[in-house]
Length: 461
Ligand code: HEM
Image (cartoon, rainbow, N blue to C red; front, side, top):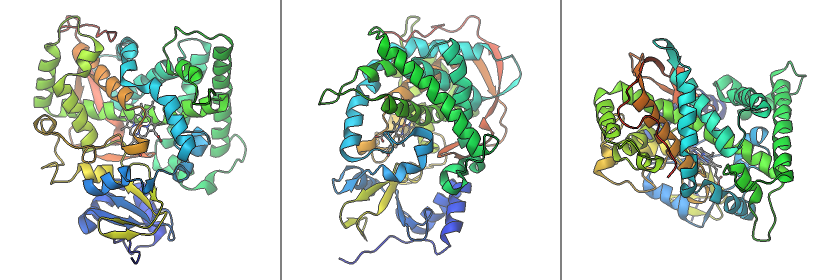
C-alpha cells in the first residue's frame, strides 16, 4: 500500500520548531482543532516527519504492537545531561537488560521504606518558611523532590558530599528553566565550549564536579558494602543481570543523573500544580481535608497512598496539565497502518498525552479540574497515561505517586497555605515538561499547632 502520512501544517519546519518550543500547548491545541486524532509535524526538520497521535486506539497500537520499537536514539538530545548509558538512550536488548536491573529498586513494595524519610523532608523544608510571606510553591516542591532524590535514590545524606552535590545538581537542573536555556538541547550548535565563562563551558565544568562526587560515592559503596541500606543506589550496585554481571560505575552514574532529570522536575511540578488546584477550588480543599482528617492517628504511608479522593486529586492534576506532554517516540519496524494512514518504516510516532487527556469524548469539560471524574469511571491505560506506557513506562511511577501523596498530605495536615494567584495560572514549557507559569505564588498562613489527627505521618508499615 502507498505510504501516506497524516495531515501536516504547510508552514516552514523552522517556524514549526520555534512555535513548538515557545508555546507547546497552543501548538498542540491548534493542530488538534484542525486535524483531530493524528497529525504530522516537522519540528525536527523538513525531512524528518514526526507523528503526534492522541486517539486511545492509536496510542494503544503504538505502545503495545510489536511492530513498534522504542528507540533510544531519538532521545540523544538528552545525552549531555545524562550520559550515553542512560536508560533513556539505550534500546533493544540493552534497554531490556537495564530495565530488569533497575525495576526491582522502583517496585511499589519498596516504597514503604521511604515514607518516613519523605515526610521528614517535607517537614524540614516547610518549617523553614516564614509566616505570611510570599513563596513560590514550585521552588519549595523542588527543594523537597531534590532532597527525596538525593536521599531515597542516591542515598546521600547530610554531610560534606551532600552539601556539595545539592547546589551543583540544582544549578545543572536549571538548564531547563526557560526556553532560552533549554535551547542548548534543541540546538546542538550552541554546545560550544568557549571556556568556563561561556554557558556551555560552565555547564561542562559543573558536570565534571558532579561526576567526581558521584564516582567517589560509588567507589566508597563498593569498598564498604552495607546491605542494611535501603536506598536505590545500594540496590542498583547489588543488582546482577542474567549473566551475573553488575552495573559499571559509568552506568550507575548515568542512571543516577537520569533519575535526577526524570524524577525531580516532574514530581516537583506535579506537586506544585496539585497545591494550586487544591487551593484554587475551595470545594476540592474541603473534601480533601475531610478525607485526611478521617485518618487515624497511627495512619501509615500506605493508608495515605490508598485514600480515594487524594488519589483522584493527584490523577486529575496529572490529567489536566500532564507534566510530560508526550511519550518518548516509538518507530515502526515495517510499514504500518495507524488510524487509517500508512506510515513508511522508521517513522517516529509519539503518544500526545496532553491531547489525549483533553479529549471531550473521554473527559467532558476537559479544561476544568474535577477529581470526581476519576471516582465515577475507570480510564484505560491508553486514555489516562501521565506516565506513558509499554516498554518505556515511567520507571519512577510508584515513587512519584507515593511522594506526591505523602508530601501533599503532610503539608495539608500541618500547614495552612493560601494561594495568592488571583487569575487562572497558565501552563508553560519548562525544559521538556509543562509547568505552571511563575511557579504558583502562595503564603503560609499558619502552622497547625494542634493538627487534626496524625501529626507526623509515619510512612513505615
Ligand atoms: C509526576 C512525576 C513523573 C511523570 C509525570 C513522569 C512521566 C514520564 C513519562 C511520560 C515517561 C515516558 C514514558 C513512555 O515513553 O512511555 C517517563 C519515563 C521515565 N521516567 Fe518518569 N515521570 C515522573 C517521575 C519519575 C521519577 C520520580 C523517576 C525516577 C526517579 C522517573 C524515571 C523515569 C525513567 C527512568 C523513564 C524512562 C524509562 C525507559 O526509557 O524505559 N520518572 N516518565
